[in-house]
Structure formats: structure tokens, C-alpha cells
View 1 (cartoon, rainbow, N blue to C red):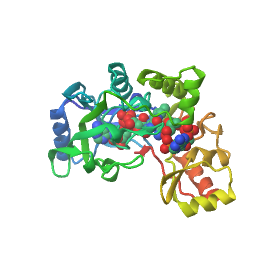
View 2 (tube, rainbow, N blue to C red; view 1 turned 90 degrees about the vertical axis):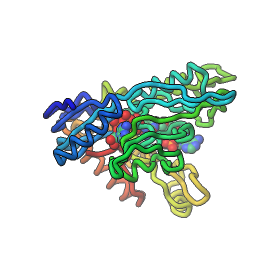
View 3 (cartoon, helix red, strand yellow; view 1 turned 45 degrees about the vertical axis):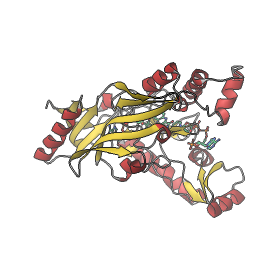
Length: 337
Ligand code: FAD
Ligand code: NAP
């Protein structure tokens, strides 16, 4: 196995801070996965799998092996009159894969257009946007289980998908995902309930949307609202929308009538974390080399950080201010190393 030593991680993650990996390698096939695990075991070093680095923050040099996932390929493994099943390599670019499905007329993932990242990372936090979560289209996952030391096929149920969470968040770094199987629909049911999608389709004069127009609308909304990571380093929403009980939500609503929240079950609500930050005055605030994006407070942006610690410290301040004002605990969505 080829490894590079003391490699700057700057080109490999979206915050682009200057931490280094002690060792670095690239994974092109399943054999590379087992080689990397064996190598780390022999050296007694930790292993970190990296996709495109759009959801990580490095706050220190990584003391082990960083392995960049580059297993590619899109393979049709089944097709019926209504569905198609695809097996996709973990290193495939997420948006390219979504565009491929949209182009073929296969529905299910169009609302997840333009989310950065790789296919293999999509189940980790069960990526979601505009009312769709990736688990809705996942059938099975191939992964190496570093505890039992064997290849496993995980069914959708075994993956324990939840709101921005999964088995892979519960057992961090236990599973190395190499392939994901998706089921796509040939007669797709479009989901255009989110206000922003409806408004954009209306603005464009589209009365009868299809896969392509929904995907294009989302690309346009996201391009307008989110910072370009190549210009302002960021990892998307830095915090999760906190879930609270119905009674806690009702109490908050009495105190803060403009609060934005949505039910997630009969007795729980998710509060829009962006609204919490905005209400604490964070939107557009810049401190040193870090700030909250001017169009969406939930996105912490870098104005040229050298260390991810700068972002981490800034996020601590935000957590404290939200806890003080609302008695709500914010949890980071971004993976911290
Ligand atoms: P990385 O950042 O490289 O890794 C993320 C985590 O997954 C790490 O812990 C890593 O170790 C682990 N991992 C990666 N690949 C594997 C693998 N093959 N096997 C095992 N573990 C692995 N997320 C949403 O849910 N919805 C959004 O709408 C959204 N919008 C975003 C917008 C912007 C501008 C940005 C920058 C981010 C956004 N995100 C969003 C977050 C991010 O795009 C997703 O979490 C994405 O799936 C991360 O993919 P990645 O390949 O970059 O993962
Ligand atoms: P938004 O439309 O301003 O909405 C704010 C919050 O309210 C969102 O977090 C969303 O929850 C919730 N919401 C809005 N309409 C809803 C509805 N009809 N039903 C249920 N919940 C609703 O959000 P935004 O910041 O512009 O983002 C748009 C979408 O892209 C969201 O789905 C968001 O999750 C996703 N996004 C995610 C990231 C990330 O890094 N995770 C980054 C950018 C955008 P949900 O978040 O649960 O959808």
C-alpha cells in the first residue's frame, strides 16, 4: 500500500484549514480497504475515511492514516416496469450521481441535488434536504466491519436511519462503506412541498414540474442561498435542528411567538436552528477569520482560517448563547477531528 507522510489536508476538505495527516492514502477498490485496515493495525494507528471533506472540521493534525475514498462505478443490478436498482461506488460524486438519475428519468433523489460530497458518505448522516432523506431510496449497503473484520451487507433496516443520523453515526468509524444500492422510481412522485421549491417553480412559470425542473429549481435556490465553498470555506449547516418535546416547544412559542419549528412526531418538534442563531444576532457576524454566513446563519464560514480550532471556538460561543437565551442544546452536525 502506498502512503504519503505528513501531508497537508488543506486540499481535501471544505474548510481548507492547514492541519496535516501523519499518513495519507487513496482507496480505489475493496482490497485497498482491507490493506489500509491491516496497515493501521500493524502500526497501531487510527484510520479515518474521507470522502470529499464537505462535512468535517480538523482542529488538530490527524495522528493516523487518512484514506480518501475513490471507489467508483454505477452499475444497474435490477430493473422492473416501475423501478431500477443501482449499485454505486462510495467515491462517486453525489451530485453527479443525482444528475445521472434525473437525466435517465429515475426519480427519488432529485430534491437532494447539489448536496456536496460522495455517495459513500450520504448514508452516514442520512443526508436530507427539501423534505427528502437519502434512506428513502437506499436498499442495501456494502461495508467492511472493522470490529467483526468481515465484509457485510447491511439492509436498510440494519442501518437505523433517523433524522440526520444512522448506525454509522452511532458506531463512528466501525463501518467502511464501499457501495450503496439505490432503488429509483420510473414513475416518480415529485415532492415540492417546501416553500422555496414552490416559489422557485412559480417564479420560473413552471406549472407542471418534472424531475429536471425540480432538480434545476433546487440547484438555483442553493446557488443563491449558500456560499460557494471554493470562495468561503464551510461545511454546510454547522448544527442540527434541535428536537424538543411538544411541551417544550409550546413553552418556547409562548415566549418567542415568531419561533420557526416543524413537527417530527406526535410529541416532538424540530426547531429551525438557523432561526435560533438569527435570534441571537449571529447572522452575518464575523469574528476574526470566522463568521456566520450573511444569508444563512447556520452556515459557519471561513474568511481564511489557518486552524479549524478557530471555527470550533466560534461554534462554542454560538452554543452558549443559544443555551442562555432558549435553554436549548445545539448539537454540531459537522464531524470534528
Ligand atoms: P466527508 O466530509 O468526507 O466525511 C463525512 C463523515 O463521513 C466523516 O466522518 C467520514 O469519516 C465519514 N465517511 C465518509 N465517507 C465514508 C465511507 N465511504 N465509509 C465510512 N465513513 C465515511 N448535508 C445534508 O444532509 N443536506 C444538505 O442539504 C447539505 N448541504 C450542504 C451544503 C454545503 C455547501 C456543504 C459544504 C455541506 C452540505 N451538507 C449537507 C453536508 C455534506 O454535504 C454531507 O454530509 C455529505 O454527505 C458529506 O460527504 P463527504 O463525502 O464530503 O463526506
Ligand atoms: P429553510 O428552507 O430556510 O428552512 C429552515 C428549516 O426549516 C430547515 O432546516 C427545514 O428543516 C425546516 N423546514 C422548512 N420548510 C419545511 C417544511 N415544509 N417541512 C418541514 N421542515 C421544514 O432551510 P435552508 O437552510 O434554506 O435549507 C433548505 C434545505 O436544504 C433544508 O432541507 C436543509 O436541511 C437543507 N440544507 C442542509 C444543509 C446541511 O449541511 N445539512 C445545508 C444547506 C441546506 P430540514 O433541515 O429538516 O429540512
